[in-house]
Amino acid sequence: MLRGRRIELWVEARNGAAAVNPVMRALLDRLEAAGARATVRVPEHELADPREERRPDLALLKSATTLALSRAVVAEASGTRFLNGARFTLRAHDKAATIARLAAAGLPVPETHLFVPGSDGRIPDSPGGWIVKPVRGVHGRGVAAHPDLKSALREPAGTKMPAGSCIVDDGTRLVQRRIGGDEPDVKAYVAGGRIFAGTKRFTPASYAADEIEPVELSGGTQEVVLAAGEALGLRLFGVDLRFESGQPFIIDANPFPGYRGFPEAVPVLLAEIEGALP
Image 1 (cartoon, rainbow, N blue to C red):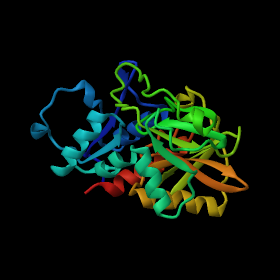
Image 2 (cartoon, rainbow, N blue to C red):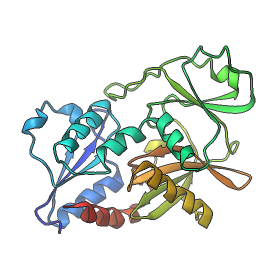
Image 3 (cartoon, rainbow, N blue to C red):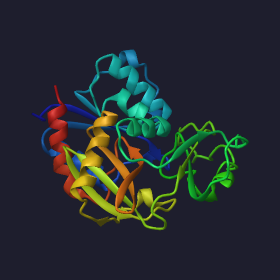
Image 4 (tube, helix red, strand yellow):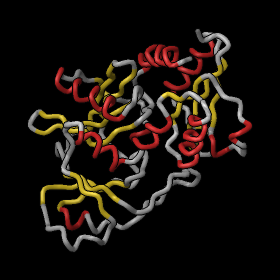
């Protein structure tokens, strides 16, 4: 099935190099061992005419950059097969649209407002803890906690993204009611209908940490996690969960997580790739 197949992994750059974490590296090694031709691509490092590109048999879209997502949508319209689909990935990176879709599907999400900083004149004060985040943001950059809604709405517009990140931040913000106090996030990564879950305390650098404490999710929480993928049209995805009075709330979603800390996800990812090939 994999021998001779051309598989591309689209990633963003970090510190000038392709961001390939240990789990993704192990996946690439397994693909090569199975006879596939696996290539890592950073679209921002290329100057290419999409009309002249040779199509891979399958592209794994693990980049959140504006250029990569735009090129993926164009390539998909021209016949390239993506896992996840390029259009679904693009819309999942819009955090406002994602929360709206999850809520429309009846899934538990925090009270959420969409705003531009400085537009707080018609919104009353509401204490209790609020989290502000960019509508387009990655790796927790630009996320800030506030004790009440008014101070959250005074959050300065715009987030300084790292050089070369190619993530566009226009200043629009989500503000969500804080769920779960100081408890760590529960990160649930899904592939092939299997859930890999663990707790990780949020820090500005936690996205790059492999350490995670595995946890078992209740049957009800697993149903919420899997239903999120259906609502977003994703097969490979992750959600961040917080709990209040025992009920899970989805606070964020990732259309292609790194599965960090779960090397056992590699064979499941390999099976998903085989199943997605034409």
